[in-house]
Length: 139
Image (tube, rainbow, N blue to C red; front, side):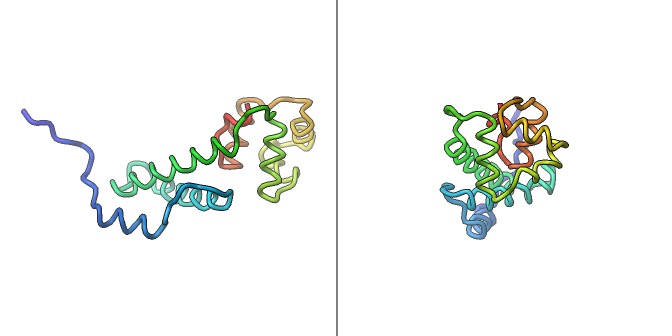
C-alpha cells in the first residue's frame, strides 16, 4: 500500500517568480521588517486553507525572516515592558495617544509607560497585534 502525500507539489517556477517579486532578504531595518509584515498580512488574509503550496512556502520564509529580526531587534535583555512600548512608539513615529484604541484609557497608557503598572497577558496580545511583534516582548 502506497501513501499519497497530502501536500501539493510546489511549482518552482511560480515560487521563483513570487520570490523575485517580493525579493525577501535578511531583515536589517524596521522599514524592511514592516514591508515583509505587510506581505505576510496579504498572504494571511487569503486564509490558510486557500494558500497555494508556493504561497505557503513564501509565508513560512517571510515569517522566519521577521522572527529572526524581531528576536534580535526586540531582545528583552534588561528591557522592561515600559521601555519596549516607548521604543516601539519612537521607532514608528507614534505618540502615546496612538495607544488609546489599544489600551482603552489614557491612564492605562500612562501607567504602562511610567512602569507603575505592568502589562497583562491580554494587553500584551493587543500590543503585539498593534505593533506587529510577538506579545512576548511585553511580558
